[in-house]
Figure 1 (cartoon, rainbow over the protein chains, first blue to last red):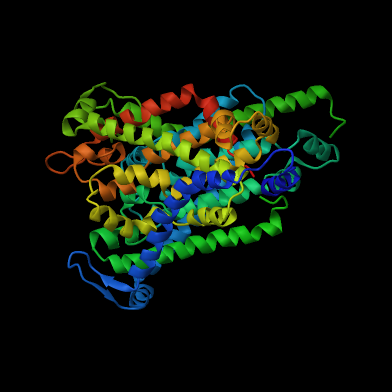
Figure 2: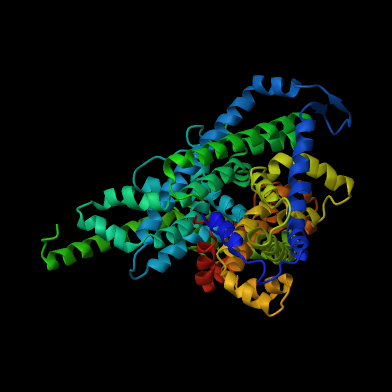
Length: 309
Length: 287
């Protein structure tokens, strides 16, 4: 919406009143040049190389690079580790996306009122965002260990915990939890800002008309914060598909391949087993998944986001 | 519902207030407890870390863990590494992404929309995907085991696009009248940016600055790939390398290093949290 307004403003500028020197265009080019060139040199060009590498057999220890066409891809799709890895990535991402947005919106709704101490809670929920991801992961590693804090607390309640990070049924969801509590405060703040721009009168009017809080949440609040849901949804999805540190520090991809998400699988293929060509094919697939999920969310917006982003 | 006596309504709202507080306190546990536990456990002797039943406070307070933090690794130097890298990344990110964001929002130039679309598309290419060519290029330039990749990548790479986007959103809603008045007074376009638009962009500067700092401070994957020797490690990498001669993790030392990494930033956050959160809230990401 903002983009359209600015285009309209641009057209309203009267050229005769103030000259629009041609120099402006070059200033514009100069201003964007570092970031645009940076993105091309550090993003686009390396990505083209990755595509090229993925058609080659390349083990950097022997040095030779050999064109093998689509062989890396056929090997990939026959590799059980790869399918496990794709599943782990998709499950992790889905878990993080749903849990993060539900918690972020719920906390934002709970905090969106004037009450004593509300700011303190906002600070608490946001605080993990400023904790280093390594420190956060290492600490959760202690808490989730077989004789760690979580199981100790459960034992006091008479419940036998499990080895959360080594049990194939709990390892992935444990990582989801670690990731969500680390980052959900950021989304919560964005939702709080969005909620504060929802006019109070609309909700009050709905309540006077007899709408329950639950109903007015779904029919008024959600549509009004839909653009924020879309943007945080896309950014959270991309972020969750890039996850690396918690996986490497807490599970090492295990047990089996239960948490061997694509970035970690790629890392091990490239830098532990030294297969650059094969790892590049994993990278291309990882990009394809990010692209597909982003596009799915972006094109779905017409159905539920009325206010254009 | 409207016919309820007001005293009953007030009673009910007190009940909901209590419920709300109980709910919020319960929800706080997973956010707050890990950090508190990390902090207090770094004052425990190593054998208390896995004590059952678990305790938050040390039974016996000791600074042993902290002492080893500095003897087992050049921790001060690693601290300095992380800080100077994060400082450069933060300042450069603010300046460069503000310039780009301003130009995308306010200046017409050839291929503007193409360039902007390209930037947005690049957000979908994480460093993990492109790490192999970047790694070979860094090696070829002899920059392996230096801080250059950790400085350049977050400032100029695809992860910087969010910052450009935040500034663009900010400058789109920046009142045109300010600029036009200055232009009529003969201020150049660059002057308008540096003297008027940028100084008035404090919320966006705060948001981008915080995000750039945290992005640099959280950089683990790149550090793992590029840094080889302990003197060059950044804090994230250093925390993972506290092992004794037998390769056993030094638990309380690791937690001590983690606390020393986390607590100063948490304190800064607590002091400046209002600007912190407001800056982020006004990022323009809210649609």
